[in-house]
Length: 203
Image (cartoon, rainbow, N blue to C red; front, side, top):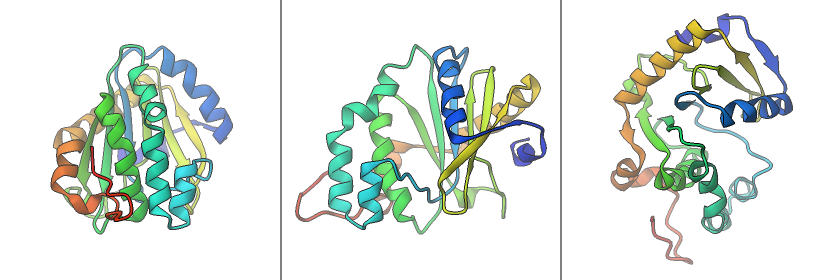
């Protein structure tokens, strides 16, 4: 069902409307928070660490992540009592953005977010999956990006049957994935390049 999500009717929201609409539902989730991420590169121009990455300054990008650990982990630690699960589809060779993001979200995994990765090679050939956020049984968003990977809004879906069907599809994909932290211990190429000036270690 998730493969055809764009064919279903939905209310299209601007980036600002999406963020505003999201938070009240997040505070009242009646089940599991699901996030499906498939693009290999995004643009996050408001994120100082991403800005450093965009300049090619890995040292600064990772320093900012390390120094904002509490801020990154806060939404997980402060979540009002519901599971948070994310499936990150990864493709080799790993893009610079993906290596940066995996370093970032490993902190969320350490805080309790249940994150798994699934190699794109495990998907059926040429299968294109949407970017989805599912908040329990109340609402689902197909998150939209422009060609460069900058957030351009979201499609808001509240049909219970459609939400349940997509959630089932995501659960099936999640079951095929590998937990993020063991994956990063094994797949070192998925992490940022070594930084000899800092001697940074994963942890």
